[in-house]
Image 1 (cartoon, rainbow, N blue to C red):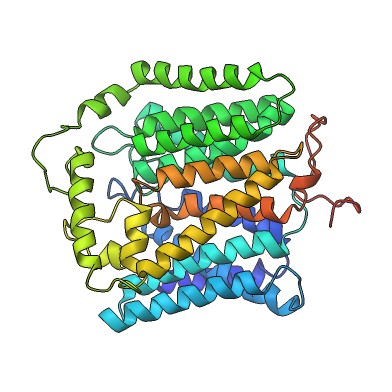
Image 2: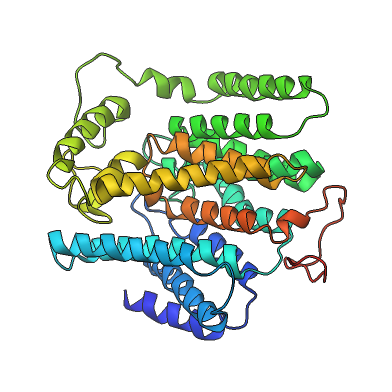
Length: 425
């Protein structure tokens, strides 16, 4: 904790005030995507634990700094205040039930930092060049993941032979790689550059190496929604692309360990309750049933942020579902708030998908991933994937720079931040 504070203060004093906000957001995503290495194998260096927590402090401080400078910014206001108010409310709910619990407070800080990254990208970021920003955000983790997974390097592969890479768990890695693949594919469909193709291939291979069925299902759903939401001059193109996606999945099923993963499920068999049992389907069904029983004790506001990860754990493990996690942590009101976010996200994405840009289809694809993957994952606990998602959604909703993306230019940009006078809104 002390190291995290020192490192965070150093960054806040020396880096945050002078670095452009878009560069800062991209940098936070990169660092966060690399700082969970070794958790899945118990070999995580102590310094990385401090770095991951320091990133949260830096994101929050950066938001406070830029909000104080730009108090009248038109995008700052109701959205940010609602998010901050909700986090504060359910942090207090947790304190009411469990007192000053360090684990719950750290979870609140991490969620607050993700909200800060979203607001920074949505309200304060300069004009980023999308191809460069996306490649930098996803490339390092994808490259290290593929190298570590194929070479079975220590700390990258867990005891079941699944790739965790630089993330806390194979499922967390799959969430990051899946989101990365959707964003890169959307850009590649506009520009067809070799660098984007390479990064997309790395993300695809890394995703398969995780063996995460939930991550792969979310990615397939996201890509199919992306394909069908894009404008197509030739209607058959969508069908061909759909067949290509499904064909790739079939090939991956036979060439990788996906068939073994599916064979682990004992459908209709006895329920196992070991949190380490690879038969996670039966475990999750039973865990969800017991979580609902626990939730009934506090149905309106739940037990507070992080409760389902540390306190309300009937089978000794996390909820493995975004929706049950929200229900237990934030109650019915939290579920309603999540529904409002999803409806707004979907409507905004579909409205933007009517244009010729890549922003709308990408938002649709990201929505598909989160919605489907969230059924069986601890998405709110996958901080690197959450940072990447909120950064992308923030940039896309703001329409800064990404809206001005020139899909006809294949020239490599010199800088992450565009200085074109006509780019800003």
